[in-house]
Image 1 (cartoon, rainbow, N blue to C red):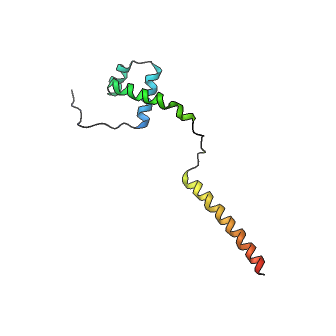
Image 2: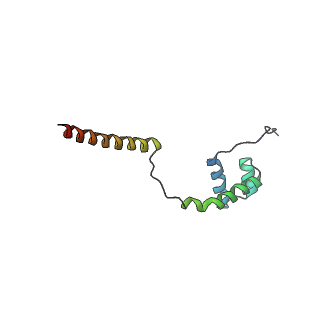
Image 3: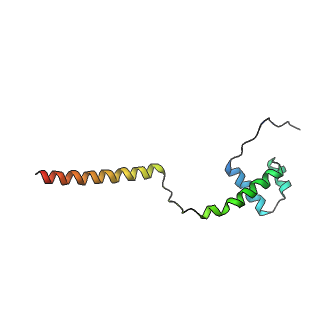
Length: 96
């Protein structure tokens, strides 16, 4: 048997969701999943409990468009530029 490294392993959110969804499908027992992914069954149960506890919050927040922060900032800048151009044009007419 190969000794495990000292310290805690960090698992990505994607990995945890994959394991939890497989546990929820009930095709395998928690013990079988633990052996398959080399994770203690208690950890899988903990992730499953956390997942189910927080599942309702997924639908609480409104779905936001897929715009990135950069796209939103660009739109704000373009709006400001358009407003400033209108003000400059107005002032040019007023001075002539």
